[in-house]
Length: 331
Image (cartoon, rainbow, N blue to C red; front, side, top):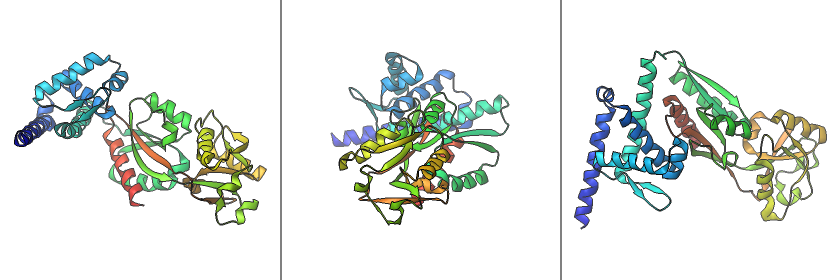
């Protein structure tokens, strides 16, 4: 029985490899019908989201036709790509191989269409990010990316949580870099990879009474006047601050919530000689009049994620994401 199982897996893998090689060949790609590419797009969507229902929502389909399309693809291949559960799906070994290669084929096909249509001008890559978490790393990656892809023009947008969710959801961003909590409810059609984790810190003026300490005891936050970010642009801020301090029995005391940029927050801190709970990445954009203080004990860290569209991500967006991940993990 074990030998039969191994032979079946080997057959699935070899079959998938053969078809992928056929699809990947530039000459063969020109013979693909729209239905063939649609099969690949449907499969990639289901595999990316781990769910037929979720993929159907993004593709604006009902679930039964989507299931049939993916089953037709499996029948054509002669292999099982997905293990279906009651509420989710998982890739088989052959499915994992086919998933990665199918994404490459789709990206190549999209690129071929752009060339045929004469869209050979300078490509624009739209990147939305939060300056509080990426200022240092993004500058390094930009230099590497522009050296490798000089014909690509990058449009960088420093955005609030609300703007990131809106613009990405409307398809106006090719790549997103943001705290995970900012997209906790998800952005339809985006998939996420963790870059790194930031520790919460206390930002305050150099003349603040607590600035003379090396570390801020968490207990000192009890009753401390704080300035935070308002719900309109950062809907998750107040809730996350409360959750952060809840294990210590502390409720943050916000005396002001800023409904604008970080520069406005910094002005408020100076004017009121107050403090703000932010993340350590903020140090890259702080004015010299403000200081960053770590907490003791350490508070729960915040993951920073990078997001790409599930369907048809731009090849250069994937390249930029790879550089970001490599740079983040080398630090």
